[in-house]
Structure formats: C-alpha cells, structure tokens
Image: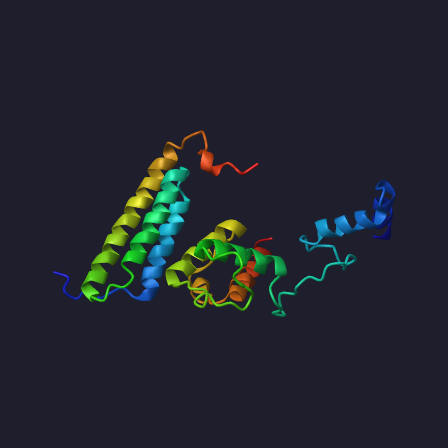
Length: 93
Length: 131
C-alpha cells in the first residue's frame, strides 16, 4: 500500500485549489459554477489545519478526485448548455 | 497631425473637450500617438507604480472578497496577510482579478503576490501585454 504517501506541499495544494476554481469558471450554468467555487473554498478551508500527514494526503487525493469529476462534468454540461441565463447573472439596471 | 486635431475641432462644438476625448480614446492604443502626450503612459522598461485605477480596482475586489467593512484603509502597500487573508484567500482574490480584468495569471507569478501593489503591477503588465 502507499504507506509513503507524503503530505502535499503548500504549493501543490494551492495549485489544486486554483485548478478547481479555473474548472469552476468553465461551467455555463450559474448555480453549478457558484456551488463548485463555494464548496471547493469551504472544503479547503475546513481541511487547512490538518496536522497529520496521512490525513492531509488523503484529503489531497480526495480533492484531486473531485477535480476530475468537475472537469468531466464541465464537459458534459457544456454539451447541454441552457439557453436562458440565470437571473443572478443579469446586470443590475 | 495638426490637421486631424484641427478638423476635429471644427466638427465639434467644444473643441477643447473634443481633443481631450480623442486623446483618451487613443491612449490605450499605443501605435501612432506620439503627438498626443496628454496622458503620461507608464513605460514598460521603467518599473513605476501601477496605474491608480488598477490599484483602486484591486482594492475594491480585495475588500469584497475578504468582506472587509467599507471604511478599512486599503492602499497599494497593504499586504494581504495584514488584511487577514490566508493563502487560500489570496488564490481566490487572484482568480477574481483574473476574471475582472480578463487576464490569465501564471502559477509562478501568482505565488509571489504579497501586496496590493504587486497584484496591480502584474495586472498592468498582463493587460499591456495583451493589448
């Protein structure tokens, strides 16, 4: 088993966070985009103080899995983009 | 060149204002505006301070992201850590700036941003490089 799963470095974690936010930007649907951003930020913030290296590595692997899911979903959603924009996206007149 | 300024003066009722708006319209476009020096352009070789508008816009976005009360003093020299932002907040702020200015910040450049001034400088460089 991967007993030597080293804790991710600070740079790696930030890079993962950035990729997640970038992927979130690709969603055309307002709701999903905001959810991905919010959930991603919450999850990272929740796990920021993990002292245990193994727990940190596990959380990092989870994050990577979720990133893959988000990327796939961004692709799928782009195929079936809704025609109408959400009301939250209308500029204040 | 004098004729262009002259003809625009003739076609508008208030020539002084017309010349001003013309120069403002041309100043983002660098080519061929050597005769209009009404707005000092920051040269890329000399590293002067970032444009005031950019700094203000960055301050606004930072305040919104960190949910700071309106009267908080955010100036060019403010460090993000002093304002209560951790590295995750910094990443989010950089993403917000990317979206607003429609630029793409590199990984390595983003790691080095520590103050509002850094961010504004980087934005100006990227915007100028894109234009």
